[in-house]
Image: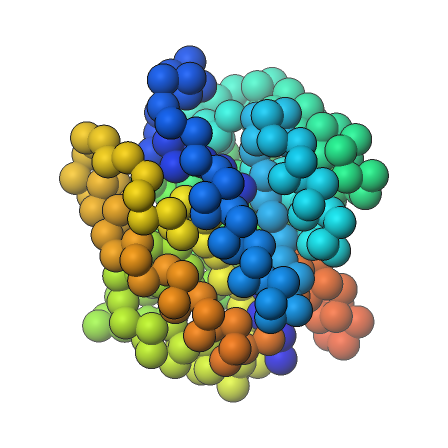
Length: 285
């Protein structure tokens, strides 16, 4: 059973809640982690889904073309990495439609998948699911069933499902339980815990026939990106154990089989009847 390998394509300063107006003052380092990750995927014949910021597509068109030429899937990550629940529906629509057009123009392929920054489609911003469908998206990966200080809908089913009201397919963050708490497969948790924890969680999900999605960021492969002051929880999860990301990913790609989000959903839908849930379930938060 394959899992989905997904990447949020953003630079280091875009992942620490710095506004667009300040991005020009930071060192641009996307290529440092991006090239390492792309090489790892290629060496292991692995296709992945890159959820790209529109800003990245506008400023790094060659990276978008590399992704498309490599047979990977491109998805939207909005234009400038703002949390969905902090912006208006009109602003969200503008962000995803402009990003979709940029990515499609550069790649020559349709863009049907989306992930919001910080998994910020929560009970407060479920209106975004209807806008995604209206703007031509078929798949969303923005909901986390793990409740944190930033995001999460604890009532979210731990499976691929459709939104009853509009037919949008939701592939939520994959979780596992440890020490009486739920954790996500990827990101900071991939660095904070020993590798065997992630491997065991992956094996348990596969054994239980649960769809699984791993996520990571290019800046997590760049140990030398600048350190800036920020709120302590965010700083800890952003910078801790960056040196583990590359070697752990090498192990992960050898131990498990991965594919794009789109392909995982296609294969799942071909073999199973997908459950459908109303937004009323998600409103429980």
